[in-house]
Image (cartoon, rainbow, N blue to C red):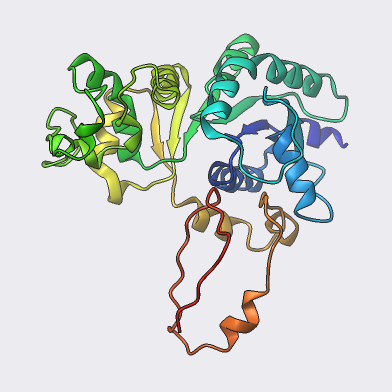
Length: 313
């Protein structure tokens, strides 16, 4: 590698290991690459194997590459989304050591610039400890809306005020979730419990996902900066409220549009993707036979699997 390439800033990008997090972090990584960054994109070893299965080979560049890291869960060759609560707990408790070793290996490579910053999913806060150890900046990228992130930051307040955990399962249907939440600055008037992220709907204070969110949001203030996939005009009041409690909050979205615009002339970079599912084009002939604007597209996300699809003419 030329000496000029060794002088590039080197960002290590770490998404939470599920499709809905990998895609926006990849968009951000492409934006950084278009601005002159060397990119190392970290996948869990499980998702690295799935990515290989979904295509003939993993597309990467000399200065934009993928590496695998142990996710702490037992080995599996299944081709499906892992159990999310188990994955959250595992990344929180077991991934720091493997990540530190990965960073050490990257810094020992002769033909790779030294790691200069970490850009991690907000749900992968173990990376903050590694950044602190290396004395490098870390950007946390929360892939939720600013509104949802602000709500997550106030989950501890729900506990302190005795609102959560719910007394029993009846609270899900007896109108309790209509309770107004009027004490979170930045959220509009009339917000109710049922309008907040559904992870709060627990009857057990030890619920894995609830505690995971408490843990990850508590550590957010350790980051050098927080970036969100939103824009000022959409969530101005929420962003202002976040800036009162966290350092350096930035709205950088919508990333999908930004990345496409910045890399429109770079076909190699544009061809890099992290889709864990093999592309199925069987529906294209069917779609081509339909009138314009006659088909409704419904997306259930990458976690949902349909065993049978029903078409309505």
